[in-house]
Length: 380
Ligand SMILES: Nc1ncnc2c1ncn2[C@@H]1O[C@H](COP(=O)(O)OP(=O)(O)OP(=O)(O)O)[C@@H](O)[C@H]1O
Ligand SMILES: [Mg+2]
Image (cartoon, rainbow, N blue to C red; front, side, top):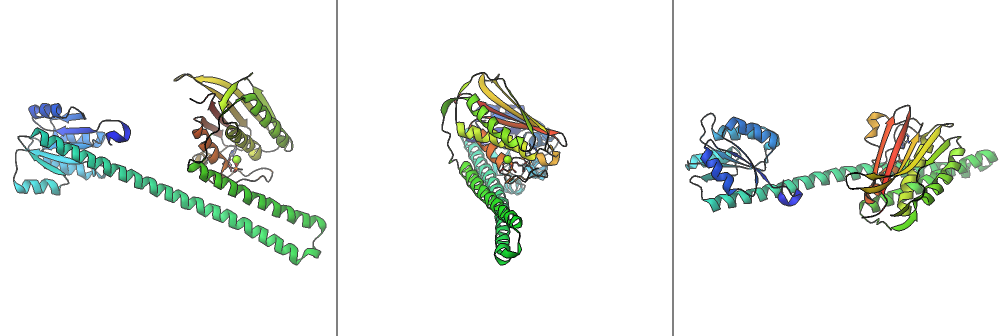
């Protein structure tokens, strides 16, 4: 943990049986947070629970020696990167070697040279902060790499399978054209067209996800009445829902609300959540859409909220963590052969974050799902 990283001062754990030494050390390290103890055993517990950024450890203590404390602290693999500096009156070479072999990074002899002690602690803290940063970055890189491999393998698999369908059906049609009836030909052609449409959607969504991830999508803010956007989307989706005998119950509590937002990005989020509700719900069910505005207490920001609740299959608890991941096509299929790329919610989540909104959901498997979208009425 470095000061630069999160604004929090580094934490020193000082273990020394002499209260006088503890006072002295606390005074000279007044710029850091400190936890101190005169007991070696308590020091071990504090190291395990507090995960300090550096430990100053006395060697000669009555109940347990500093070497044994060091050994016990380093036995816990979580503590392996915490630098320990030994403090001691002893300066014999074998003690220095023993301390360093036990995993200490430095060794300072009493009486302390104040400036030397400060510099050594500062250097070791900076070293620890750089190591922590490198560790976090390489973990993040490994995670991104893994994510990317997964993403690429699904995209390739989807596109390859779709191409195989198109290739297979066109071959069939050309080779046995005269053996098929007109309606069979039409069926094959519509399958080819559907598959092509799906490939196109995957490619468009893929390039959109990539642009969002690279920060290349920037909001374009304008002023508009939110009802204009909501009414327009509801009108469009009511027609689609009608074809599945699904009723959309639209309750709009916003009389008139002028917002300063990115119209098309917000529309994309609302449309995806609405299209999902229709896509995964069985015929003859109901979808309730409620729109309202609210103030968030902590900073009095005004938000507009859109809730979309369906009576569809719900999302299994074990699948819920995957919902916003790319290519998250979960176990409930679309109910009328609609296209599913599994990218819509990943895109929605990224847009919501970009616009400083909030996206949440609750779902009961077998009963239905409710998505809640919130967006600030004005950009700060
Ligand atoms: N309302 C819902 N009810 C049940 N399952 C849902 C619901 N919304 C999403 N899902 C599940 O989550 C998956 C991911 O949804 P998402 O919107 O990301 O992709 P999609 O709808 O499959 O494809 P796209 O949005 O790109 O057309 C869906 O495939 C579906 O399995
Ligand atoms: Mg979707």
